[in-house]
Length: 368
Ligand SMILES: Nc1ncnc2c1ncn2[C@@H]1O[C@H](COP(=O)(O)OP(=O)(O)OP(=O)(O)O)[C@@H](O)[C@H]1O
Image (cartoon, rainbow, N blue to C red; front, side, top):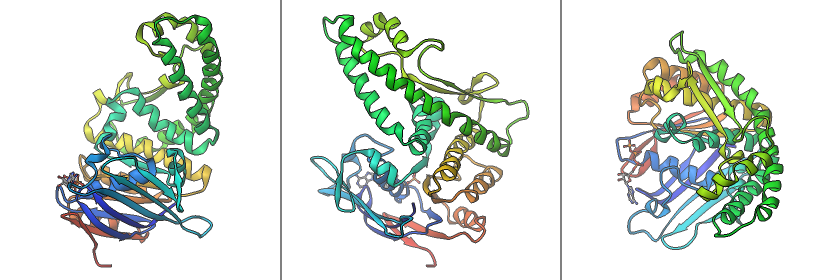
């Protein structure tokens, strides 16, 4: 659902920003340190309940300021806009509100603002830990399978309980049994939902990969591993891993250990691809998910791309621009140079677009 209005106060160098946004494309340009990433971070904070750059929220609050706040109006299909906001003081908890009512779960924020981000951290998808790839794929599962959110919440609670028992000095296998049964029940359901989303995701990625123009001999394989040995129930796998789990003090198999391996000719993609090729492949994953989301849920989403031109030549920028045109998504793109943003705007075939200049924490629309 598009964000129509945005107000940001005290987020890094953004002091008092008020924007009327395009429901299509929003391009932001400005020199290094002008505040482009901070703007995207503020939007991401509303959608995820957390920052994408730091786990320390206090770093987000402008120096010398008592708090930061972000407020957005989000258009709804009903025609009535929802208002979502966050206030974070220097000390104490963040308060998130939707239409004036406090929100305590990030799932509610994510459902209101389905949002994907492509930024420099996205490279972790190929060269980072498996939980990053799992998180990327679970974005799709969460947004198209409504049961997933509760199953995952209950599953992670059960893992925590089991882990705290594993760390006790003395336990009997009998004490773990109820948690193993619960993890088996929830883990199998989570895996089933992931499996249902896997093929549409792989098919969609397959249609996008030729656009990246990788060398002909490169074969991209995406392999899903569910987190425990095939042919076993999760209960059996948990029983088998008991000694290991006790040694390490945590549960070493299950749906929280699933993996989505990305391979080029059987080698890790991060080891084979150039940075530009990696960025394009990562973008293909995001676009595939957004397209499936759009088809199945028939509602728009939001995509943030920080420094789109970085690492990409004109051919790959064109490839991303073509993918963007196929999406019914509100897009926020940043870049350093006005010419790059103007060129992208001109590729958008008369779709609604706005261009903004970011300078020393102030953001102004160009030629409104
Ligand atoms: N807590 C803070 N209070 C005030 N300013 C801050 C704070 N933290 C960081 N900054 C400054 O905010 C500015 C904006 O940073 P931001 O990362 O948004 O810039 P950017 O436009 O994305 O730059 P780049 O093109 O280099 O990525 C920087 O000058 C940074 O030093």
